[in-house]
Length: 212
Image 1 (cartoon, rainbow, N blue to C red):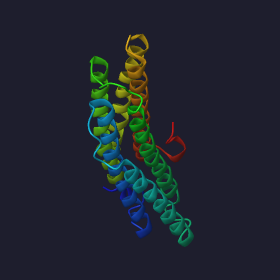
Image 2 (spheres, rainbow, N blue to C red; image 1 turned 180 degrees about the vertical axis):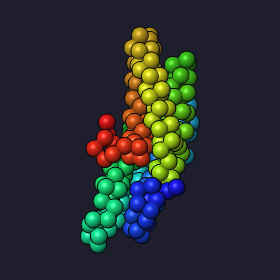
Image 3 (cartoon, rainbow, N blue to C red; image 1 turned 135 degrees about the vertical axis):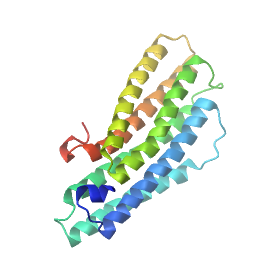
């Protein structure tokens, strides 16, 4: 059952377009996240144009806003709550692209390859967060409450692991040129995961509790 069926059983064309834009935003955000985190945590060569990817995300966010506005101008009483949720989700998806770029920037602060047990643990968390992108997209587009709850529960587990990484870095004797990029990286991963969980909450929670 799709999210529109979940709420009303109807699919106004402009709202359907906005849902497609959000799907593209999440898929593009996943590509950007994978590339920037791979560069930071696995010393990979950056073969994605992250500026172009972020531009796609921003363009699609603008498209969501236009579609919602046009729809409400035509029929302001129809799908009102869903329209507001779409705007909230689009904002979360846009933030994911921006934070992904911060991870790329953190790479420039490192003067040596990122290796060792600390970065190994961060990679595990990155991989679990990467899997959250598809899970979040699917639960949102399908309006699947169970899948959305799974995303939120997984993010809670990831958040606990992230706190452990912060404790590890605070007590480590790693050089500054590694501690700082790692700290920025794990913080960025955590923020991205929270935005994905917020999108999932738009399926399970009423509007006023989506950002709790």
